[in-house]
Length: 411
Image (cartoon, rainbow, N blue to C red):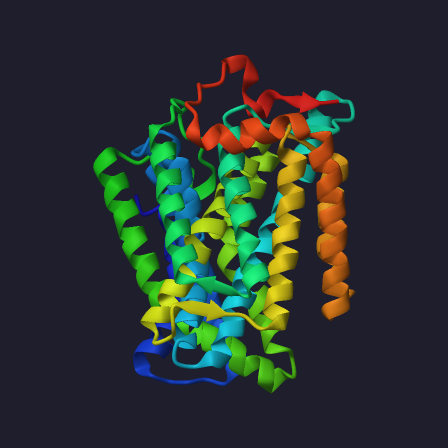
């Protein structure tokens, strides 16, 4: 058991400075605090991700996949909900809640989806000896896309109204609950495909495995709770000290720290030729962000002393619109359950371009580009729109073995 948990102990050792600083009440300079508390969040995120994967041995079915995606992004939620809660008494923090949410969302799709697809196609091409043009998912993922499609369309209410209302938040949380219920009812009899430390922990005897997993969950949660607040505050203070826009620092550095383990797990799956499983994990995480995360923000805001609606300024509205149009394009491309190489490069390229065209005009131009491409993809895949949108409410059958995602490629 100690050998299997060696990576866990190393991560916890890396998180010790953050724990010591928080418990001692010492406040280092903002740049140093970003590094130390950020390291604590990253280390705890890895432990959390390994525990969630190993738990798949004991939690079978589609619910395990959904819960893994939820747990993997909990560090991100801790940071974002802290910003939203603080904004209830300090309105200046509203922008940071919006920044963290939109940044993590665009990072997940623009960088995460694209990288997983490109790596999967490279591995498939190398193994087959011929060019592979698209990653093909099995029909079971249609339900996931249906949930994402409905949540994404509803999310356009936010930039249109300029606020995230409590009623919308409660509706999204209820929709997330329905998503988990459908995931629990789905049939997935496959053995979990674990990699790295999670595989070694999952191979432990039952009692040792469950003890280790529970201990990892609890320890990682404690580290995240201790590190999230000072990490979030240090990002705001550090931006001022370093002369960097605090909005941008919160928007990109915090998600990079909290989502690193999730990205690494997905990339490892892709490198092993499990592109369908890798992309499926990130699709589920995207559903979580558009339902659980957004739905929780107005509740945290109100608990922190704010009114029933979290109001957004002009820049935050632009960021939400850009995030929503990017999601619409990714969804439109995947309606046919095929993710072509050109689409991956397009999403990755547009994700990179946003850093070269800052400002209101640049964001609106990108929104237009995403929207035009999404409309083209929707027209091309129009026969799949209704079956996908209605799939969350229909009984889905388990795909035949011949239709398994990881064995489907388009050359």
